Length: 114
Length: 114
Image 1 (tube, rainbow over the protein chains, first blue to last red):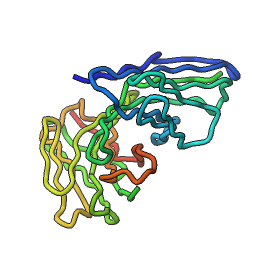
Image 2: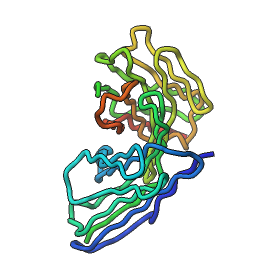
Image 3: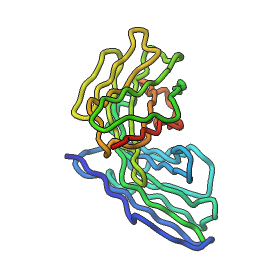
Image 4: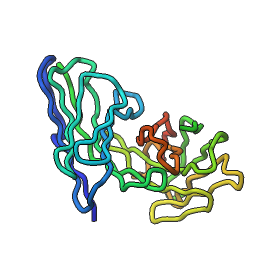
């Protein structure tokens, strides 16, 4: 069966520090991968999605970036964090096929910026 | 993405059926109807999805109106663990070259009374 792993579960970082969140998927090949952010009391916002190695699409301009160095690995990064980057970050995967395929989410990383 | 409308909150008793409504009057012919739920401090969890016919799985049933302008998620016997925010989301059945992410609204906050 397929599984998705995200780490760390919680993270506290100072303003201006770098960030690296990692997500890996097991049990499937060539998944579509996604990064979402959920600010406190708000809905999920799509940040990045990827349909293959090295292919990244950004939905929201910001100081975050994403990379996909391997088929089942998706990384969210920042060189200098802002206070507004606080939130709940979620990675998700799906089988290619858009509307007919569900997305499956990891347990998320709760990021607090001090 | 076409918009969905859900009640802000609903309350039900444990061990009773729950019917969660969703209106999507602007749905297109190729849009799939997806339902997800999010428990406190967790990532969203896929529940069920369908196109035209009613669907059943181990978690729930999805009843889709004949004109597809509304749908109902049915939890046959609610437990305390079903207390969550339930999201009804429309997904295009094909890629139009745009973002492939899910658009989460505010959902329905389901409260289960013991």
